[in-house]
Length: 314
Length: 314
Figure (cartoon, rainbow over the protein chains, first blue to last red):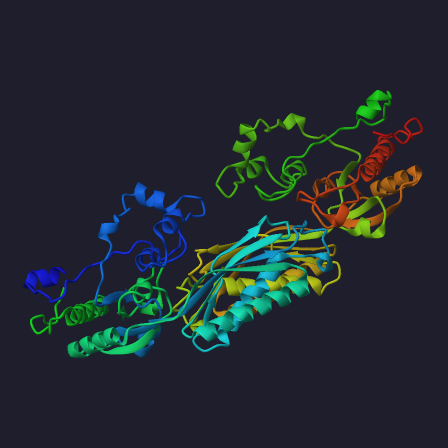
């Protein structure tokens, strides 16, 4: 925006910048709550009533930090939506290119699995008489990993785990864990989930530990709009920036925006594919390449040929 | 004590009642800290400096609640030590007897195992490139269970687990867990631990997740004093109370007391072998039988034949 203003560029369609709240969904679930609300997936009251693990309401917390916006400030109807992000994975690095042209977002399903055993003293409880919820959970964790490894393009992760009573000399009575499964094809995603269900049933039968699965959130795979993907590709080509086509393994706000606006995304290479940790890093050169593809694609979609804007350096 | 006073019984040797602090070691490790201190295993400053997970010092907490005693109130030299406890396991119930004559305490070894992987985003990280600390931990948890099941009389438990960052859409980078291994024979206990070490090494080699084991506490198997065990047996026989001989799978203060005083224990049957949970229950009849064996054995060891004290009912 600053570059366009500095250069006095005007576009046929106005450009608008959106700073989404709570893309990650780590403290308040589900993820991408703000873009989901704008896309009509969630009502304002649903969004405001979400609570964190300590019971704090999302709406109250927004108000407390001065981030609760007005309806009138929502993004309006648009001809196209673009989102630039670091890749968060190793594909571009492996391919040796700085920028990814993102063709879509894989489907994701989130479940909470509760293993219900019996809390006994770790000493005097013979192995044969135990119902150890953590041993049952361990089999599910290893199984989710195996199931995902057996399917091309699939990933499966148990990210969160809590055992009760969680003391050294007591057999865990209850284990609660999250399961995150992802794939670009809806049928394959469904079969990954079904595989986990079968495994949980098997474990329950063999161990006497109950396994209950609550599939609380599913995001179907989202292919982006071909014309916007093409605009990104053409812009990168014009700038002489090497690219490859990728699918996003992570959810992004573009996912919900695609439901109401033709959308696409641009990825900048991540070193070691790391993100959501202190080691996350992309080189200034790769970020610049990504930003220039974004700028050029935005101008192309907003109705200016782009001749007046050359490869800017920040 | 009340019964003896009510009946005006005097003994050749004085009887003393001890209420040990922190037998369990759940909040402040290690377990059986007070009896360990009295037996000379731990110095007062070691005991007072133990901290809980929030950093609170044991000595400060004792002072805060008014439980910090004086050295002069410690139990003095003794001819014998007896301890009555609920069994906490299902052996007496299986055998159909109310009271167990405890011949000794199995050896216990406690370790902290840390699995060190790499925290990556759960979506864009292909399975083949992951170092998932929780998947590695799951293999260890299942393996500890298998190792213990393969050895007669052994138990093995992972009771405590914590994953970091412990969020739904991030591959766990670090998992910390406790491992509790127990057996009555020192060589077998050592081989159980060695089996876990080999397994951890295998997992590390196969997954690229580092596995570090800190064996922070070991309690060698403790056979009790034959003369005190015999006194317990003879007392139960005199009272016509059915017994069987058992080893304790859990640690008890008698373990440390045996190092300075000839000791033994008496178990009262636990329904479903449950303890350390709300369902823990022993019938009043079984508790009475256990208490009467304790009383009779104490009198026998304290130098009174016991003719004046009959089977009391509470």
